Length: 196
Image (cartoon, one colour):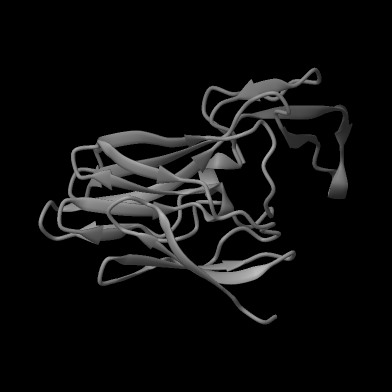
């Protein structure tokens, strides 16, 4: 992947957000009331390298490149809102700042679940990294990081609203359960084990 303005070097070139972060924009939610797309995003920094050698497969020379996550840079999760007509970024709220190394899978991230829209509230879920409620103006109403489990492949399921509950399926390789958060406070209301 080529990132404009970033040239891989033999020593390594730091890129923020990382090229891996560019793939972490998943399923947006659309609001016909605002005409905006809301998307959960997870981004970190990476280091892009190039090889010391020129390769010639089939006689065509090229420089091989590589990528690693920056082991010292934290990952961040965001809620972003974009105008559906112009693509203009309207809201960019940092929801969680995570450790410098996050568990996950090359083909998934903590930002896979689709945000849920309800009136002036947007609920975003980043798996075991946390869940939050953000008002349409970008104000974070609550954050919860109580649901801990080892997510090998990242979260795959989007939460569901039912009455005053935000219901979340948590599939870890260490534990599997379904939990409900109070949609107004983020407090865990119940947690039920799910047999594997």
